[in-house]
Image (tube, rainbow, N blue to C red; front, side, top):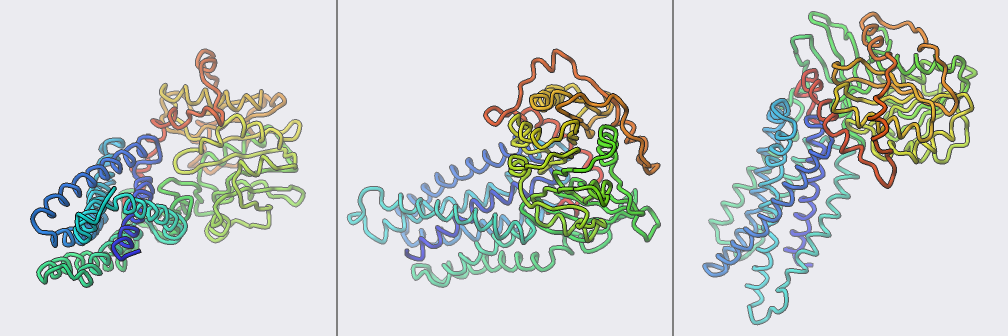
Length: 537
């Protein structure tokens, strides 16, 4: 493989790496939904199409005027892409925060344009330019068939595959996405610097211009890599009207960017609460006295204790900060925790007072665990989220059927989900309830009254009739008592809506479509509550 093909391999890898990173960069601002992925994929394909067309036009013009100009344009494209990425990285921490508050869908498309369009157009233009270079060097009489185009696009595509793998398994779990973008920009700048030095067809002024542009991009990328936290404002206390916050720890993972944040009341030097954020969403809150600070955790516990007063075997799907295992920990109680993220247990221990000895921990996907489990549990808590929502494959009749086989006679499964009390969410909620009922005939649904907007919904399900008694009475912090009371209102669905709703299955699952609007709405309170520096992942 000649050096030009190596370069096409590298730039092909960066193309797909950039697309993958952008999906994660957008998540804290715009959420995870069909709208977001529609923006990413459509802008990507448009940019590639424009780049291939533009590169072809440049190749035709340059071949007629000056064949040496082909090498110059080929070397220029990576540097132009690097400059664009550095420029977008400088802008997006502030700009995306404002775009999301303007309109989540329009803002997401605009964000994709900023991050993807110019870099992908310039990098994809290199493919037809390389074909033209190959033809000019080999002589038109010596090139037949596709003139080497097939091999160029083959190498670029294989590079894209390798780029995705490196991004997924090296960059994402080890480096923040902000820094990963700068690493890509640095790589592109180095490509141009290499060509400026090694390509003998470049004249001195072309070498100088390329070196200046690529060197500037590389220098800016390195400077931002070193000063990233200072530039983003993460290294200091962030002042807000309702108090201040301080970033305690940040950990990139396969399953989202985790931040541990301390929140301070105005004028106070001791943190009033500690928050576990995943891509901007609070997964766990602890108050100053180590009491849980999230209303839904008390709701899940209250409903569970109301249904099974003395559980001996408990399954917790999704650890978070470890609140539920700690609340139910007793010497005679077996607790099994299933968690897919390997950093969850250490984080819960270090920052939320979790004691790993209270439970047996299983590092695997919940779907896999319940399919194979042989234990019969008195209580099962399902608090399963990735991004804004529960993944589709954990909202299917097949998963519910497997889950029902893990439940002991007279036991109860408690589900937590984020929903909306408006009419637009009723069909999605009806499908969810109907899917649960396909395996658990007896269901009780709790959520706030209409008009409350985004909220937690708690669903209790069992194979045998559930207790009619209200949720158990707990000792709840004063600041959360109203929120808990609002959620723990027994609700019923409109029979006609329930009858018309489809059951979600592995073969037919429209959960993402049904809930897309709702999960866009979940980002609105996030944007109001979380300062911009803490949304940069």
